[in-house]
Length: 255
Image (cartoon, rainbow, N blue to C red; front, side, top):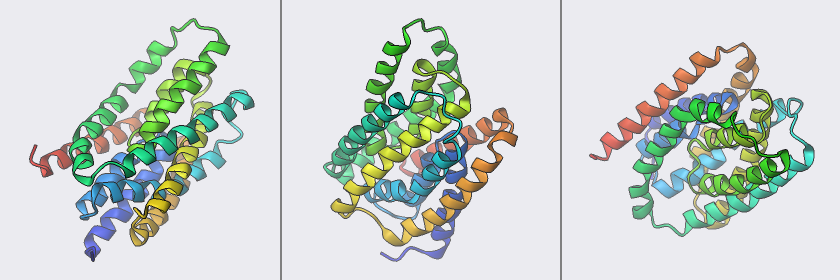
């Protein structure tokens, strides 16, 4: 199917913003995924293509934050392993979900992801009250990450928000450290899912290339400006974009 040029521009700019969002706090899929649906890409292919298209921005963030991570290396490795297993499971489930079924799941998934993003600050504040031992918290983080990775391999929107909330509860540390762990785990999930999608032949390669170009540019700009950006303003921008895209897509479906 030939995609009109105007939609390709929409995909590029959405990917640019998504790459910047992923570098700052995550949630980029909330912008990039609907742009592919607007361009007429089928839901399952759109999800698989988004995973590949935004992969460079996640990898860029992981490189930028590598020196900020204060979580023990063995815990990070366990989280990455959990991410790989969960990512494979979620991607496999997606390939075995009919387009029509996945199409019906998109509205509640988008609503859930946007709501989680909105409530993430409250979740983090509640997480600070935990009194479990470090060892048990680390185990909880690994187990929780497996569930998050299944979600990420299947859909992925706001996966970074899930992880930040989980790591706030279990790992603690600075936001830069948690972002570092988040980007490594997110990259592991997406890499595994992409391999599954490649074998499933569910990727639109031309559009994935356009997305990657935008995501790389946005990821570099987002990562470089992270420390200079007012966190409150960044959060409000992400929330505005996430809810706008969610509401517009639901309205487009006539729900």
